[in-house]
Image 1 (spheres, one colour):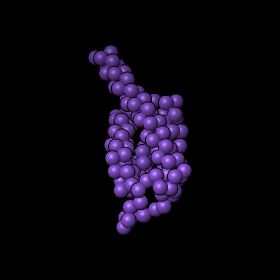
Image 2 (cartoon, helix red, strand yellow):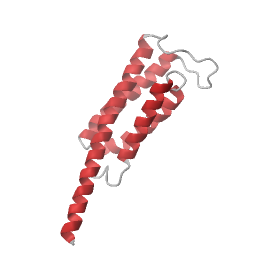
Image 3 (tube, helix red, strand yellow):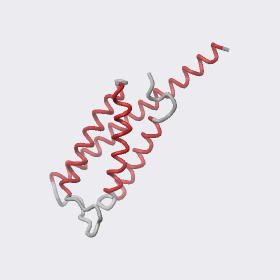
Amino acid sequence: MTGNHAVESQADSGWAMSGVAFAATMMLMIGAFHAIAGLAAILDDEYFVLVRGYAFDLDVTAWGWIHLILGLALIVTGIGLFSRAVWAGVIALFLVVLSAIDNFFFIPYAPFWALLLIALDVWVIWALTRPRALRS
């Protein structure tokens, strides 16, 4: 009976590790998407269509800087998840939730893109919160 439990535990660990690898890969992609959108907004103020009457109206350049900084933080944390760094799990969850909130406010500027990134963020949150996903 003890041998069977060890096999189940090892299988759970394999699933958990693949979930963390998936989350890290997605974080690298999401971070790259944020950085590209941020650079586009910083380099060309008119790249994104301005929305009139939006309650959370920020300058497009401000959105660009928010996306660029968040994207770089997501990339660094994704690399940390690949190396199984202890700090990376908690910070990854925080940054991905922050990314989803940021994209929620960005919906009027790029609706399809923002909703796609929110869906990827939710998928990463699911992968990181699986049982034993962030334990060594």
